[in-house]
Length: 264
Image (cartoon, rainbow, N blue to C red; front, side, top):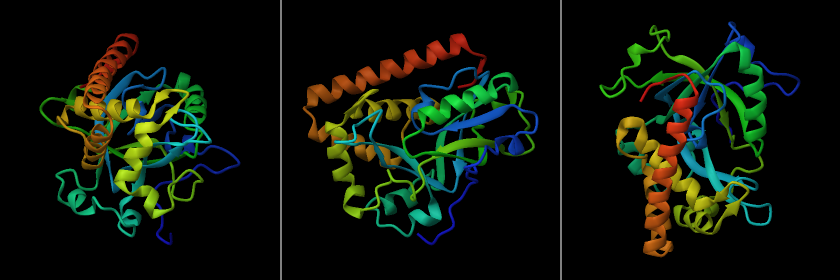
C-alpha cells in the first residue's frame, strides 16, 4: 500500500475542518447512506460527484449492517490510483463506464450554527473505521438539476468533508478473496445489524443513486444487486428492492419538508 492516499485526514489531536471552511459552515459529501439518510440541519442538498475515487463494498460493518461475529459489508471510496494496484474483476467494466473516475452522491451544506454539532453526529455515525477527509466536489449541471439556481460559488468545485474507510483502517477488506464480488454478495445476503438487513442497505443505495437523476447506479453496485438477487429467492429480492425504493422516496420527501433548499 505504497500509493499516496488522496484527501486530508483529521489529525488525532484535533479537527482541521475549520481550516477548510473559514466561514464556519460545512459542506459534507455522502456516497453511501448519507444520500438517502441525510445529516441533520442541512439547508442545501446538491447531487454531484467527486473525482479520482471508486466506490466499493470493501468495508466490513460490525454495527449498522453486521455484528462483530458476522460483519456485513458497506461502501467506502478508494483512491483510484491505489485501486488500480488491486485485483478487481470489475476493473475493465469500471474503465469502460461513462462515469470512470467519478463517485456520484450528494453534498449537504450545514450552516455555521450547527456545523460542530453535525460533525459530532457524523463522527459517531461513521465510527466503524471511517475518518474525515476533504476533497473537491463537482455539482451536477445536467438539465434535470439546475445547479445555477443554488447559492453556491460557481467559480469551481466545492470543498467537501467526506468520511472514508481508508485501506489502512481495520475494517477494510485486505484479503483479496474477501473482495471478490461473489463473496461480498454472499456476505450481504446474510448480513444483519443494528440498522437492519445488509440487503436493505444495498438496495437503498441502488435506488438512491438512481434517484440522483442519472437513472442508474454504478457498475459495482449494479453487479452486486444482480448477484444478491440470484442468491435470494426471486420474490423476496423483488419485494425488498421495491421496499427500498419506497423507503428512499419517503426519506427524501421527509428531509425535503423539514430542511432547506433541495435540488434534484
